[in-house]
Amino acid sequence: MKVIALTDSIAPWHSFWIRFGQYIEDMPYRIEVHQDVGETERLKRGDMLFFYRYSESWGNLAYKLRELRKKGVFITTDIDDCIWEAPMGWSKVRKKNLTLAIKECNVVTCSTIELYMLLSIIVPNTKILIIKNSTPKRESYSSNNKKKYDANETILCWSGAPWTRTKDLEILRPLANWAKGNTNLRWLHVGHADNRATFASCLGLRDIDIDIVKLNSYKKYLKNIRGNIGLAPVSSNAFNTYKSDIKLLEYSGAKMTWIASDTPAYRELCNRWDIEGRLCKKPEEWIEHLKELLSAGKLEEECKKMQFLSNKHDHYENTPKQWEEIFKEAQNS
Image (cartoon, rainbow, N blue to C red):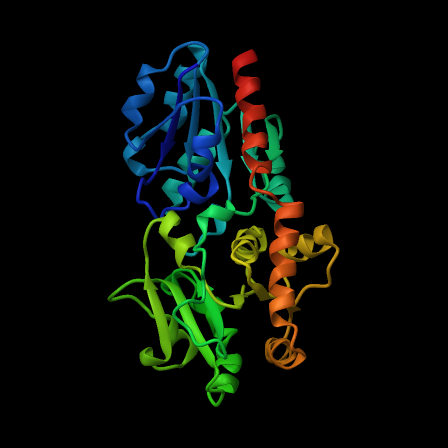
């Protein structure tokens, strides 16, 4: 069975590599990754197409998918964000073309129960499966994630693209203001890009106050996540309601504890792990959680606990096993 993964971008930092690409080497079939929709013309009966999002260069993808299904090609896609509420990058035409393409799939997968409920309305007659994210492989991380810092320093880490998350980062401004006088606190941002909004500017800090690691491939991104406490602020809006728990899994896998907004996905993770979690609804709660971590003397113990729980409940192997079930269905269809 030939398997083609068609993605709207093959940039090494694109979310395709987080959601699907990182598992390719552990899939039961060789998977070709392409950005050119013309590559799908090589598929024949018994083959499988997985497409990720939608590129305007693909034109009328829904029509192409119908023709492939007539040939006996099994088609699936994955939705890991509510693109219908995306704040940027998705025109009405692009959203419409993706929606029409989704309706031509044999199976649609998603990452959260919220997306599952939404897709049940959009494609009520299509099989929908939740494929949960998992903790990245232990070897994906640096073996010593604090080697450049003093042993007495506590590193607060945020990973992501600030120019797309300005509202989220505004949540951290009171925390950043409170932390200014603490010389043992260091800030780290993984995902910086020149000539874009900076993590520092979003927090009201100076650029020199932040250690930065530039935007790079997902593999290098994981190697550069380091520190003691990961921060996961998520503002309240329709798009963020559907966000998954991937950031907390990445932090936990890197042996970091975390402070996060109280979102559906983060709350579900805490319930799954049977922990209260450091989830915040008010700005002052971020400060209180940080104070507690700094004063309790149990920061290292909590970091170890998060790493243990992430691998116990959301081990890396869980996700490729879920994808493998879809490959089996394609093979037997």
